[in-house]
Length: 294
Figure 1: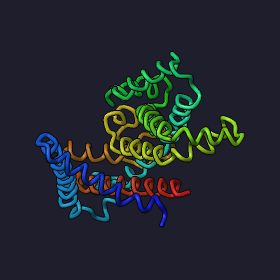
Figure 2: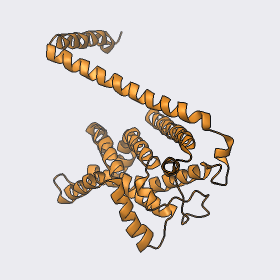
Figure 3: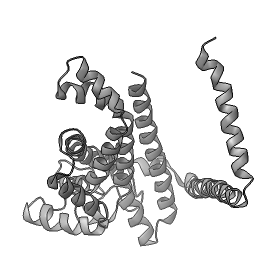
Figure 4: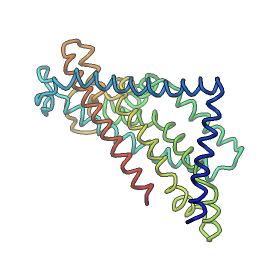
C-alpha cells in the first residue's frame, strides 16, 4: 500500500479530532451553529423564491407567449428572449477579452508596486461599486446621443460590457493568482518563454476560475434592467439590426408588472428567465469541468 494512503486515515482522524475538540468550546459551538443556520436559511430562501415564482408563473405559460410578433394581447416574450441572447453575447465579446488580458497583465507582466497597476486596480474597484443606473446614464449620454446610435442593442451591449468589465478582471486576476508558482518555475526550467508559460501553462490551469467569473457576468447581464432602459430601449419587437431598439426579458417582466395589466404573464416571464439563467449557468459549468479535466 502506498505510504500516503496509509497516512490518509490518520490525517482524517486527526482532522476530525481537531473539529470535535474545537466544538467543545462554547464560542466555537456558537459560531458553528450560526454558520450552519445561515446556510440552511439561505437554502430555504432560495427554494421558497424558486417555488413561489414557478407556482405563480407556470400555469400562465401558453403558446401565445412564444409567438414571433408581439401584440398587446399575446404579450409575446420571444422577441425579448432573442434580444437577451444578443445583448449577452455582445457584452461578453466586449468585456471578456479586455478583462482577461487586463488581468493577465496585472498578474503576470506588471511589476509589483507599479503605480500603473495601482491605478488600474483602483479604477476597477471604483467601477465595480458604481450603481447600474449611473452606467445607464453614461450609456445614454455617450452611446445613445454622442455616437448617434440611438436606443439600440449595440448601445446596451457596450454599456453592459463596461459594467461587467470589473467583475471579469477581478475574478480572472484571483484565478491566475491561485495557480501555484511551481507551474511557472517548471515551465521556465524547461526552457519555455514568458508568453508560452502564461498561455500554455498558467492560463489553462486558471480557466475554471475564469469561466466562473464569466458565469457571474452572464447572470448580471441577463438580470439587468436600469442600464438597458436608458440605452437599449423597451421596444418589444424582433430587431432587424444591432442599431434597432429592443427589450430584454428582465425589461419585459418589469414592463408587464409595472403596467398592472399582465401580472400573470410577468410571472410566466420570470419562470422563463429563471430557466434561461439556469441553462446558461449549467452549460458554462459543464464547459468549465471539461476544461479542468483536460
